[in-house]
Image: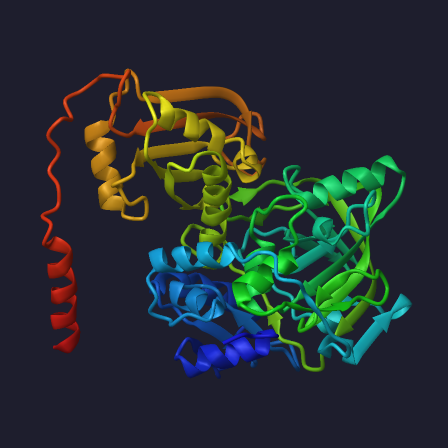
Length: 474
């Protein structure tokens, strides 16, 4: 099923038993963050949570954990909720191959029902804000899609970026936004500041589920997230024009904020409980001025819990981190079989590959570290053989325990870039990166004793199918 807005997806989740409504009155803090934290511990079928009876708010609707399980992620892609994660990644790849799918431009977006402009702009009038973790430095928007254009080439639709960036609410019409240097919005901002200009942005909250997925996907600079959303949806993504900035925004959003990132202006932002499972410190970050708020009547506020993995963010970005890296590697190395970069947004990745010759796996690992996402994230890459499933951790542990000789299978590369949020970087943003080659050595790298591997019996697959069928019929 294709969803054009958040509300229709919430209906789908509810029909599938994947939405839990909380009727009792709860406090915004700590109950909402604690509930989202707890939901992440319910496993691969954890439901979304919906609150509409919140102390201190007369008319608030809050949705949490919307993407917070593999069951919900499958439904977002229009797949059965029981679809295994490996099959979801495979389907993600299949749909990726249909990119690009042109957008559908629509009039009369639901978010145009209500408008606040000028002196009336007040984020607190529209959004039921609360802290997710008790050490957060303020209220945050952390699941919004931020839209910006390349100031030097504003007519190139592919260079219009749609990304998820954390934003601290700092006033009625002011946000602090973190533009990680490796991300497209940082490139847009740098170009605007070099020209002495502000950068116009549109910030959309409460989006249909695929928009949230593609906004968190590390795509190439000139690839359109909207056209990728169409590929993943199997139908064109509906977009509308934001009236103040002229930016293309999702047609079905609950709230659209328009304004500018003020050029060359920085203020302290943070700390914030991040996807690394640690708090980020306070740092000088950009300032966003909000000039217009458009919002749907009775808007649903969606936010994302982050903390010690796994939480909703890990489900949201898991598949969408694996697939781009795999596709980028396979374009140069067709021997690559699969990439599992689900762990902490790809700070660790497991890559399976065939080998052309000795040392080949290490070379693939180094190339992974220089992909667009790898530059800022991949600091530990484990290479495994093509017959090892990188999503099957017992197989990966077997490869690590039997294939690795530290004397020749570790490649430690010093002083490479990583995002500043990595708590292990020293100084912040710089780290050593490590490749662990857990593949079988091939000539001319003749080491070890791997000439007699145990193989699955030819009949094992048939028996696996038979046993699954017998269990399902019990």
